[in-house]
Image (spheres, one colour):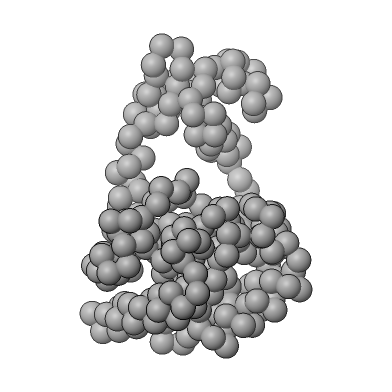
Length: 254
């Protein structure tokens, strides 16, 4: 997880607060940004105009929106990591075989970030895309990563991120979560039974390095009507373990 800077630059902090506000509001004018951040309109205007000048924000009438220039940065950040290029062909094959949504997630700053998502021909639409961040405790992917992380790191994540409920099935008790993580370590697979999205179930396995530290996690997600019984408990986990093994070997020896 990231640490607080010793001497943070306030103007840089404010710039990112402006961008996050535009993202959260799906576009906003000067007055709305100033109100959200409790700053003078002149300050909000100067930040927005500078971001537009540098082409990271676009203006449509009186509204400002996050610009497409961030796509270039995101593509660079993703593709500089060997994991994405190594894993993607295996994820595509798994999506073809299962027909479901296949996901690759990494941890960054105590949250999960979707690095890659591949849709099979029966995959459902869910409210998340590449780059989307999620709480680790509410996903099979996150639990697969936490289960293979040091206890001290798990405690740090829980202290900083908390255990907010996404659905009525989300685990919000630290002791219960740690019991589940122990089961994941023993069994090698994690499950999400409608814990992040009602009606959606997932199985996930970790991608580990040579020291058994988690690099990422891979999952298959689908509606509970299809992800149930032997398919959820056995068939899909076996496919995931095979894919994770190939990715680990390719990362180690490429």
